[in-house]
Length: 146
Image (cartoon, rainbow, N blue to C red; front, side, top):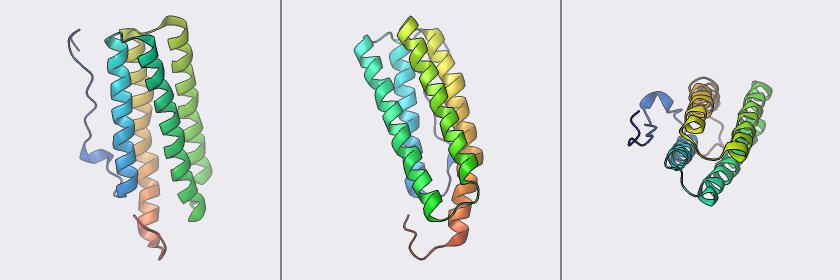
């Protein structure tokens, strides 16, 4: 990536779970990660980056809680494994926050975020969230609303 380039995290069909609300939340989360990466490499003011980090952390927490509430509601058999995956992401988020607090904005931190957060998240969507969406689609519960 050249110094003048901006990060773009494209959504592709491989990331679709087939559950509309999950896919829409994933798209919003990826946009947050993209905005944070660009703020870091453009060395935006610390308050701007800090607000993006806080927003991303809050949004991820909301999304994970929503997913987990559906898992509990429908007795998803892999709930505990999925929950551990979510906790792992939060650990990565906390480490990123720590690095930002120590070193501020930098291209290196942006690259670390791309590797750790985006890499983890893409793997999580393609494996764990797709398994969950298949489970939801298969049970076709009468009270499930997409």
